[in-house]
Length: 306
Image (cartoon, rainbow, N blue to C red; front, side):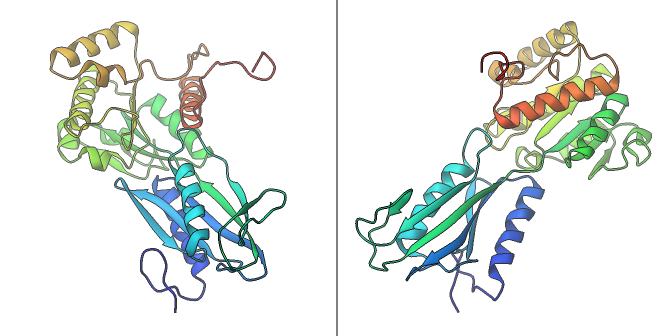
């Protein structure tokens, strides 16, 4: 019985196991890349149906499965790494290799191998499912959670008021945190916050949102992180110009680095003139979609010059 890149024995149906592992990772919030042997002719190390997957877990590359080993696998692994760490939302690829010196043909990549065959490998990216932490579970949070659910995203909620973190207001919440802001911050770390893609400060009380901002930034800065960089979630705050000026001044005077504070989005959402909670939800969700795809919201499209 052969072994995968992680050293574990490969059982019958390993291709399905590898795919399931990748999908579990995407569901849990981490991008996954899967390579599958699609077809082959002649003698090649990988057989159709063989799969290999890559995820980044706690900053470390973790692999499952194999597409056959040798030089073929190293070339496929290089492509998978590029897609895993792509700054924008990447697209999949189809790779065809000729396993003989000087192999030629349309879109065939030669490998210095004596196998003599040809193999086609698909490389597919499974984007992480966004997981939004809504800190403050009121009307805007409820509207954002409803829209996120329609998109297949996950949401969690934190509020000092039990009613606004309960199933009546947030029926689809993955996590419910009820209690003081300080208690929540004390229970978390920069590492644990990485389970969220976005944290939105939506509280009914300015003092609570201020405490959330200082506490979350404090955890990130202590770990050498900035909001939206690396494994750190994006951080946004609802509010007016005056509210943010007060929050920013207080955070900087409290010792938080300016670059970390300025990485916080406030106000959240793209400018569409939103007024109602439902309109605000559209603006906020649109801004998250743009951030995930690496698109500048409001930039030109094919109709106006892109």
